[in-house]
Length: 351
Image (tube, rainbow, N blue to C red; front, side, top):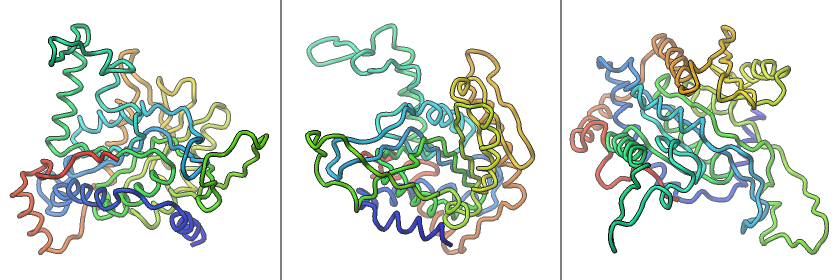
């Protein structure tokens, strides 16, 4: 219980989350059709179509002032999360993409760094069009993203700070708790280990004229054990362990597997992380490598995790919902169109 108390103290002292009600509402809408599929025992209730994966992506910032000018960051680009989202979508999952604002987005990995200014050109005083060399990748990105959103399979929620990320993660976990084993958490984001507590943070910009800056950072409470024990105890949970020293990588991955009660830990070595990873489970270790230079390592990785979750769901696929709620869900979906974004609701949160 001590770990839960530490987590609760963190949230109690955190700044209020903007758009909390809007986030909760759009997640409810996104969850509804798969909750119905999972609960009714239809022919698709054991397939990925009844599942939602939360893919966390990018890196959290740690503000140094309340009116933030300076912050601590990390190098994460969000490539792993964006690529994995594409493969989960291809398999039929609903994906909630919890991503760092301005990080790599699904279907956009082939675009240049500044796609709007680089990929388009004016055609007259009012119109624009893709430049010929970028037409293929631009059309592909827009069509695939549009299709995923229109069919209710992709929900994008951006964050920036550590506070925002963890508050949104808690909302998602508590919402997806109802999906039981049909929910997955794929924790690819690089989450800060240390932070400045809000109640100890300077209000305004720290002045450089005061001389050398000495600052004590607090340790972020461990959220994964709380997610597993309290927020979404039956969800299939995957975390990542990145190290620069291969000698300690697998040891630390196994320790994280046990300590956080994960179903799988993905061990990454910094230099080779785009070529191969090691899938660590209680059954052992599996090296996952891309087949060639043209394949993403996320393709075989996501496939292996889907197989593992399928076995997990088959052990107990039940989702308990009151019959009256099933009726209500069915009526709501019949009005909105199954697995489509409800009218008037966004399929992403712009914060």
